[in-house]
Length: 257
Ligand SMILES: [Zn+2]
Image (cartoon, rainbow, N blue to C red):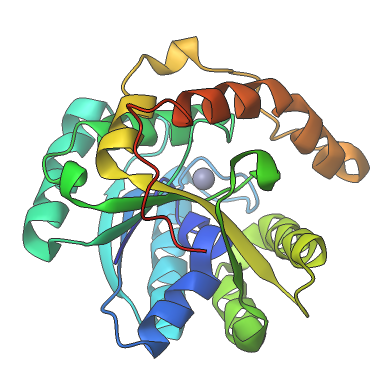
């Protein structure tokens, strides 16, 4: 299993529970983190120092999750697909994953979009199954076709999230998302939902220019309104992606409940 994270913390926010469950079943899991998170402004320090902090946090989170970390760590907001593509291709060649956890175009974050677009061209993706994970914007039943009850690993998820010390605001939001998913599906504590599809279908859905996808970034700081805003603002893009994913050319067969 290979998790592709645009920033340090996306791996834990997006699919820590799934990662823990895969490992309990004996799967080997690796996490590739594309950028170094230096643009975060949660500490009064230089970008290079923030990048160091976030690398250490990612290493600690990986240790708590028990996964191998592939720190690609390109400078956040100053990288190109030309740089990231070969690094992702190398990870695929080395690890030969069966299942890939990937960011999506529904998340309305420009850097998540660029990573998704770059991943679409990686050789070997077409041999995998892909599970799109949500970070900012819930997939909802409009898109999700896999829902996992991750309640039994709730404490480990929280511990892994707490490793990302500089990102406390994201941790609270991430746990809220997992609680919403649990509530929706009737799970005890936390749930994680994904859109599972073939690697070829993922590539198809993400091969167009990100500029043509919905671009309204919901990373707003209007804290009390943030969750409903994230839900509302993505309705159009969710519908659009659901329509595209329902196309017969886009194979969703084999998706497991
Ligand atoms: Zn991110």
